[in-house]
Length: 198
Image (cartoon, rainbow, N blue to C red; front, side):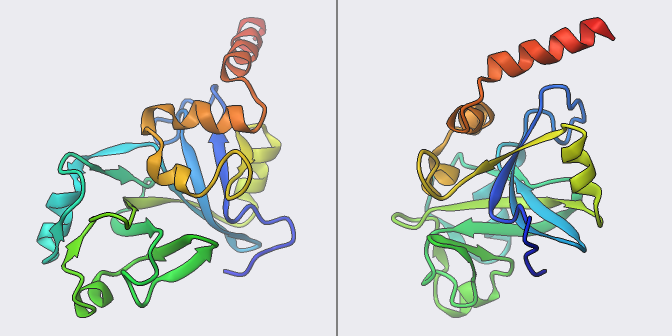
């Protein structure tokens, strides 16, 4: 997808507290693409049930990172499709550059061919997700207009790219909102007040 002038690609979307859908409740989505044809992103803070070593082991690779690190649930669409965000262009020669300091791998074939069977070792950092979040034409725009999502920039200032790899998934939602100058407690309070008036 190409980028539209008002594209939210390469930004974060934070769900507002009143969004009760289990797939997106208090979720942070990193947007990979957004244009007139729709939008696609990966949920960063929804831990899946599988450990990364289990997944990559089935693909013929050896995981050298934290043995307890879990795969993220990137979204409800195509839950068996894998996505890897990482900070090392040499790890996968065919990786797509997303933005400064961030690459995307969607197939481990080139990783294996490059002889990188040992993966996850420092200093390379990566985030492995299964599935993605997708929107059709104008769907995301309508949800934002309805107040469902709050866009938050990433890649500069208080929220560098490394944050995606280093932040505790449990605290990502609050941290992302706070760096945008929004208090999660205040947003929750406003949402509760509106619910009481309904």
